[in-house]
Image (cartoon, rainbow, N blue to C red):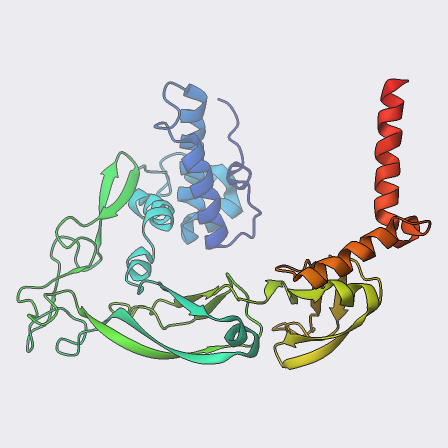
Length: 374
């Protein structure tokens, strides 16, 4: 007869393993080698029998004590400790395995109130400086007549006789015990015989709630504020859901925002671009003077430090002003004559100095076509 393996080695635990370690090791190995998962595999079937026998002995304090003293001999020759397949409660073992996966606190979690989402629209000034806004939202609140029970006033729900108030029933398949939602109470664990007419047995009713939402300074488009517990009410003592407020910022007529920086276009006249001067530009704190140096080209950026957006967690952005040289329109005859004279002066010996970018561009164009013809 082949020598039997040590029970501790079979389960892969030490000799001082406690009950929890034994159970965890057994569940892991039993699921792995169970015949239903290994059809036709003789080795797996034998291994499963060894695992079951080892657990039957080591999970029983008296049998474990005898095994520790005498080894396998303690259960030979008709001793009272001989293993019996009827001794192991597979409903307990596999019920724990599948209860963790399919059951557990699922009913409690499913009774948690739903999260709510609300989009709040702000203008740029409100987003930058912060504001408190009132919103009115529809929510499900605990019924104040039945206090969430769903039953008619003066009555109470009764425990479901099918699942005995557990909300789940066990379906045995061989050695496995799989938990399923009770078909009688739909997982609630109780039955309402006379429903509350105010909430129609749901335990909650829809109301409109007005909330004051404090928007912190510096929020940006797409930011989300979470208000814990301000969503729908939970049932049977479960937690309320949360309220998520999504920020949407209207397009501003002057400023564009990129992170904490603001951008705006500042039109300047042809003469100011050439001769220089000062122009007033807007900021979120009022108007400021911007000095335009002589010979400024269109598209140049001027940075006004600290005139942007202060971030929620510190840091101040800048305002970047892009000057755009505006071409004059609807000229009078006198004004046109002045421009004709100015244009003629540019075509003289100093013309290249007056328009350096034009000279560089057209010199490049000439070289390009000269290279094509050679």
